Length: 123
Figure 1 (cartoon, rainbow, N blue to C red):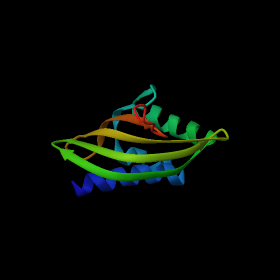
Figure 2: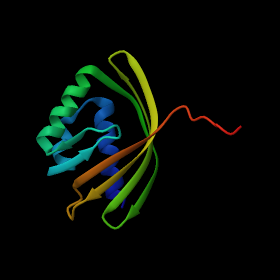
Figure 3: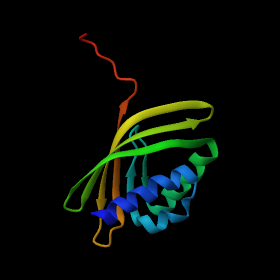
């Protein structure tokens, strides 16, 4: 499990330092990556293209891991994300459900978000 956590940390760090060179070391060729707001990327070449295109317009400012939960070949990661994209600051909490193959490469990654700020409609 520690190996998987290191792989995930390395992936998050790639966004912080804008280094897509490690993507091929983390994902399988047939990765399926679903972002929390709708887009889905199929295959490592498409993921690399998205990474490069996104980083031309934006910068990840923070991507902090809160916790990992492991079960079988799946890892859930709870996190906080903040970025600047085309002059606008965005931030939200999220969870990624990550499926690994037998060689500890990511075959599927699904993101889910919880918008910030939270509000309390019944207080």
